[in-house]
Length: 175
Image 1 (cartoon, one colour):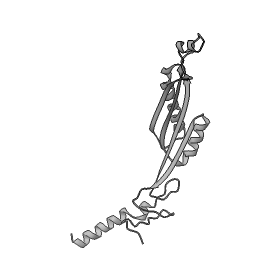
Image 2 (image 1 turned 90 degrees about the vertical axis):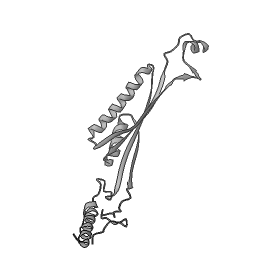
Image 3 (image 1 turned 120 degrees about the vertical axis):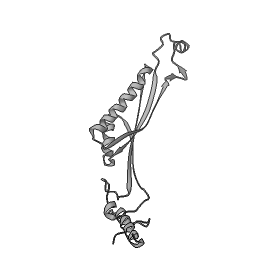
Image 4 (image 1 turned 135 degrees about the horizontal axis):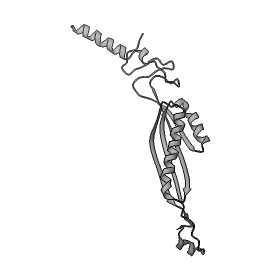
């Protein structure tokens, strides 16, 4: 195969790879073809328990309820990104409630110890178009939700508003 034929074959392969028809795809939200979308929702919750051993179960139940909301919405993707929870002994005036503390405060009846807990979970999901609906559903269930939707350019090509490739990064433009 001559050098000229190899060059033409290589040029045709590059033209097919970088053709506007292949990259002039817009996302479901109408973003240009090379914009990447991310949607993340973080949910916070807290409570007080008298039995520290049930806190983890309550936390897990909240995560399961949140996942069920996402499942009911038929989201394409709903991935757990992070989770944390904290448990603290409830103190009164800097003194943990115990029989000794209650006697110090002048009463003989010690209340049950109390444990404050708080936690948060963060999920990444798609499609981003359902972000506000997801937040609304979780808010109706009493959750404190923080929504973050962003889109960014991946750096490979640039697209104009119509989605056509307009690249100065080595892509071959169609005429």
